[in-house]
Image 1 (cartoon, helix red, strand yellow):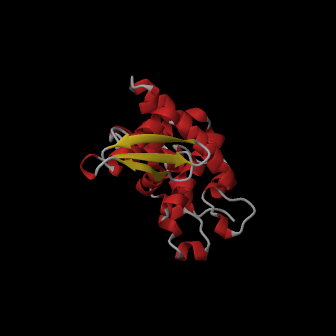
Image 2 (image 1 turned 90 degrees about the vertical axis):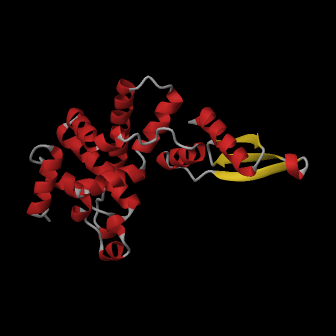
Image 3 (image 1 turned 180 degrees about the vertical axis):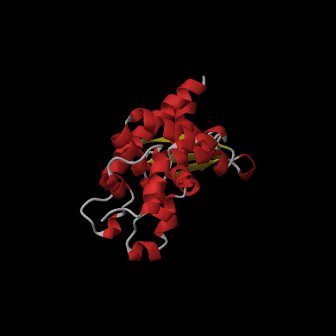
Length: 223
């Protein structure tokens, strides 16, 4: 089944030239709920890597920040939430191919689905027109998030949460390890852990302060 003319027009504008392989782009827009042999997952896998490389190169060219800060910004810029934000700006939801149940369940505005489709479209562009075209597209489409400072000066807990999401890890878990001393001068020790990555312990004069310190230490060690 061919894509409708309005979707082909949309894709041609997105790609910067008429699309060469309609089946490829149709696959990039197709959610698994359609029950078709091919959906966007393989192209999403590819697009995720292309996006990461383009943004990493872009950050390297435009910042003298240390690796930890670069990683923080990279994770924010390639996160599912940012991908979904870009997809909405471009008008991707109107062209996604969803089954009735997924559509009824709000899939057309789901950050998870929109983020995946956005990455799949980048993958399709890479396959169809090569890396230079994909780089140009990403730099144009991500110009606002990049200029807006996504991932810059984040609170350590927010940065860790974003890092975990961007790397498709389970959310960080905070555990109170101990509370020592009198009420007026208590010291709290908190452990933060991300499954299959690692953990970090830190102390503070309040539980919140200890959690913040633990998140900061975790990012220094693992991000």
